[in-house]
Length: 456
Image (cartoon, rainbow, N blue to C red; front, side, top):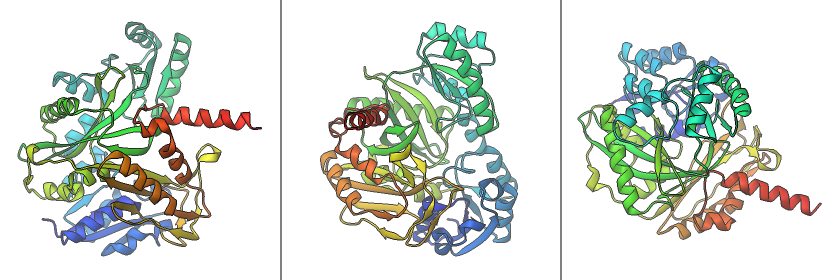
């Protein structure tokens, strides 16, 4: 096992890694920007190094600064968390060239599965179903029109190197497709430094289902079941749960077996997540793979009892997985609410500022992953995620009840947060019945707007 690692991240994920390291007796080094000097991850780590000014490009994305911090503190490995440099194959290669272990998959896996076109083709070859669409990068409008006419509208344009809804456009006709193509290419270039896009058949009102995998360096690969991530706004997840209300044991087993097959086909190692779209008929399609730990990993930990971060550290240190697929047992149900510093009443605009009043929820089967504390300042430079609130119960109904109670205890003032919106979601009958799709939030907001107009 490592004796000392650096965490190349901030916020709650940095704290999550620090906690796992402490329990494994691993010395930790935090890096931070100038505006994060008083952040909780800096206080909890054994050492801390400032790597630049507030903007992420000057600090958390500054590879030379991160590597310098690792070298002067003499660490053996770097954990990238999620976001920032977590899926940067170039960064992983630099770590290796500096004799620093990158805690994640090999650079070639990051590069292969990070290219969505290559990932789709590899999974197709492995026997996984993929959505109909282009098999190469779309460059010209004539090519885009040809693909759209073949798979039939609606179609969706996606950035080949993208994520988080950037470089993504839904099109229902030729006119929209031509205009959206250039817009998507420009947005992809601005967001990822890569203008490449491709086209898929748009699946109407699907579920967003993802499977967590863990693979050691000796050929053993297991999956830890699925998470339902359908509750999202503009392709940004708001609430996740495990297991999915949409899957029965037969379908779960079928997708799980395909996930293992796909991971073996690309010789995948470390942790990762395969994401699928599930349509109304129960047909599913491989969408993409995330070559890192996910924001929503806690719900899987709650239902399996497996500490994913610790397993990630052990695998990276060369240890074998201590369990196999038959050892994975699922217990109860778990839900995670992402609490963001955003104003749901004002188009979810970010709400940075100082937290003056804070009351954190607790109680049985309640977990809170957060980096906030009374009088801390939420910076406008970074993601608005304040906390991940997770509850676990014997069944979905009990878990929803626990989450509603926990949200009622969670007080963050004076900044606006998404707590009230999460309570609306949990009170919605369609959600309680487990009958929803990726369009759920959009419909909920439309219903709310209609009611507001009717009362004014």
